[in-house]
Image (cartoon, rainbow, N blue to C red; front, side):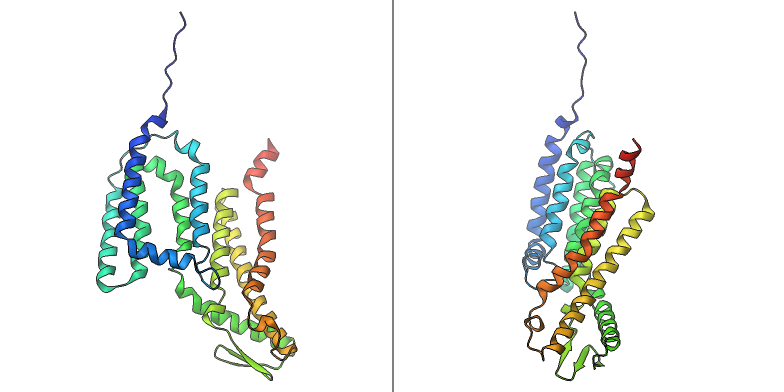
Length: 288
């Protein structure tokens, strides 16, 4: 007779927690239906929206969780009642924001609620593995508006400086750059907030995937932000120069969204390559 080895399959403990999680998510989206519809409206405003990358952020987080499914399902889910504190806090935020009709706080409380539900139903060991994916969702939420005006101011001053260096006659008045043959306004939409958010998200993603050193992660984030600001400044500078040289007749003067993403892609691609080429995981593989 051969002894039969008993094997513990943690997957069998996941059926009920996943059912409860789906039910809780559906109830949350129903309660927060106004927030959910507003987010979908922001995320599908592809031509000019500051948060048109939101759906991509959501899908990437879901994909990262799916990629970790083997390590996640080796853990046994358990109820964590401490998460109820966060759940009560998030619902209090939502209720207060609903009374004063502040949609931004309601949207933020939606993220906190989904986080608290996941933590409560799956437990700390499991939630620790997917916490970063929830954290990345913050880049898809409209909570970054306070950064728009500093970026707008920075872009205006730097572009004005480089125009002066290039000996292009320009007079700056507020956010207006006045040329002999026309004027350009560095409007809030020209602040580069969308490039800033996408670059910050890419930086966080690269730091999470490729690095374990906190110092390297901070460096990657700093470089990503610097490249995003540079891309937007270069975009605005290019548009102004083409407007000056063509007497405001060049098509970029009136339509320059695609130019911005083209410049951004060229600038950010080397960072993605370098981060993947010299990652901590690559170093460990080389040492092995």
